[in-house]
Length: 107
Length: 158
Figure 1 (cartoon, rainbow over the protein chains, first blue to last red):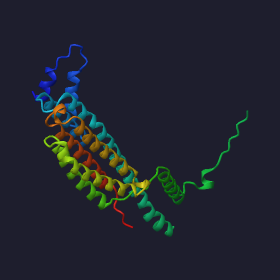
Figure 2: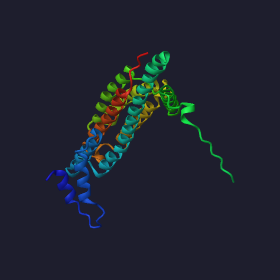
Figure 3: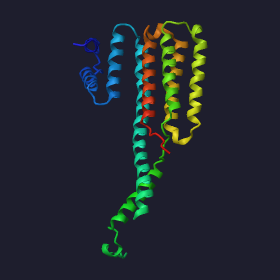
Figure 4: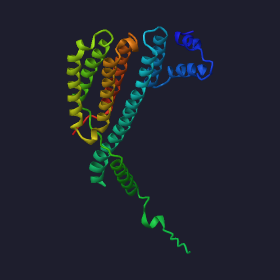
């Protein structure tokens, strides 16, 4: 069992608010995700959880770090948007150059 | 209420002529691109250099927050903040087509300012002795995404 799993299992949660198995499954599957970004975030969460369990960061520090992931996600969304726009721009430029300027002159 | 329908023979208007079809597709596509707010800014080597240099400067500084006192770092904080502002103004000057990169710069500055604020307010005692090491990792990842975004842009061949 990984340190992450051991720590999650060791948390006392009498109210049953924490879905431990679901959380472990979420991180485990995210670490195998196709997206580099998703894998990296799963690794962040796992590392910070272990650091929390070993006292290298406090609960307050842990919460602040996890909150920063939201900003990383917003940055990634912008990246994906730019990728799609750049692809459309290549197509538009290609149409302009090869069809509008060249082909249209011949037909 | 009467509804009048009109039958139009496709062969008469000849809309299936390949040239007409091609022309229609091209015009439709170009008008759609216009509506979507494209073009976007092209790849810029200066932006790439700013991002890679700022990544090193900011992460190195934030990592030092775990061990250095605030007064020891104040001058460096000011220097790096000015470098970030200069790079932001460069991006802002490119205008609307560069809005995505401007947004990314804003978010990176937000992360950096948050690290400085927490450093001044709390220090490593309340956040953990390796908190800023990890905050620097997050900041580095934010720069990596912005660098990858710049690399996604097309090279201007005009």
